Image: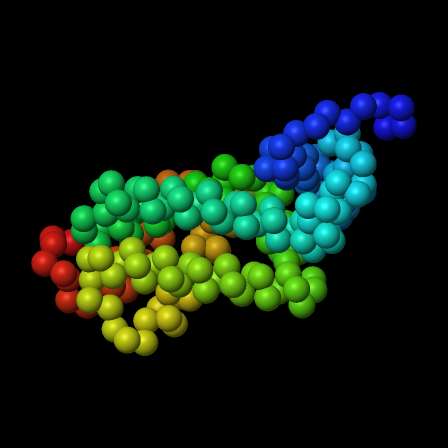
Length: 201
């Protein structure tokens, strides 16, 4: 890269470029190849620029997974606001958005999430993601069902089922459609025992 001119980009655009480069590295070479120095080299920028954005490799992994999570959250929220009128609707939206997001992002993101357990910093972030899912499930399903007070264990169970079915679909042991249908059925079978909020389910 010596002698080359680094094209100046706005900070947000540079961050997005670095994240896209990191995703490409993971897809092509695996998570072990992911270092800030290599991301900088592949992106055509100096190492200090990558370190300025992410600080550490753990910071890069957190940024990648946070970006992934934000995309999924936005898709879920938009779909629920547009058509989440019944338990069946909300269950289908959560099931489809989770499975589709995992499959569309590819196996590299699964490896990135797995790598989050490597350090205390990333493990804490992974736990915060799980708490975020509980909040989203509570908000989404709470629109159509009167949830019990001790609902956290239910939603953590939902997340475990979602992770397992999405990974089976990613490994092509089951189809996308089978994973979505099974997950939606799990959601409905668990929650239909609780009173609805006056909408058909």
